Length: 257
Ligand code: NAP
Image (cartoon, rainbow, N blue to C red; front, side, top):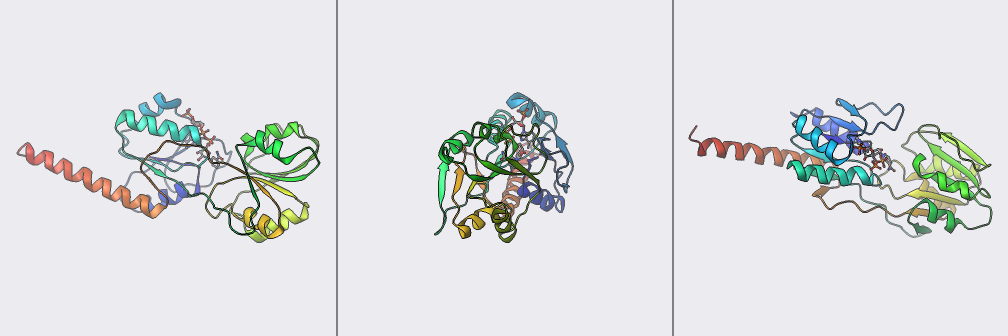
């Protein structure tokens, strides 16, 4: 089972659908119309570590791949705990973070509250690209003009008076995001360090326009065996399946069958 909600989870699902794996992708169910998935999907929370452990047992999951977003901290912690409890081999498919390059003006912040403080008391024009869950603290800084981009509508809308909403689903390009930042005269970007290419456009665009990025630090997630690419995840699974087959064969030989 792949814990998903990311491009990598979808790509891994596709790769495994072309091989001899019975794969399920698990989605939290936050997005109203999620992107089509290449393998069967289950939706909704499991009910914490206990629920996930029970699911792994009941569904006889042989391998668990945590391919969730780097900021999905709770489910990654739950996956590590439930896998340990049920002896289910777990692999993290973790997107490496972006690193700042010449011309980037990044200000590290822990999250929305710190971003609000760092933006200061003057009025700014802010592009908020942090996901719907993280928006509420920006109500406490109503002096700014905000542009919010999200896949689904922000419900309830922010209480701040000057908010422009854009509904869009990535991937986004640098050119497209530069045009967007320019058309709204944005002077600050607030973002997560998601890694990958699909949402890097705004970071490159901010660099080219000399706009600072208030970048959320990545949350800590449990140390588990991890890879960074779909190809490595497939190789890990092939290897793990081979090991499981070898030990089943060894058990058969020991029993003299
Ligand atoms: P989270 O805070 O780590 O998880 C909160 C709860 O949501 C979990 O305890 C679990 O509920 C449920 N959950 C999360 N991911 C799940 C999954 N793949 N399958 C089943 N249940 C899941 O998660 P989040 O940050 O809200 O992210 C939710 C989903 O959106 C994830 O699939 C993630 O990959 C995707 N996503 C997140 C971000 C982001 O910035 N956080 C960005 C893009 C995509 P129970 O405890 O009841 O099991």
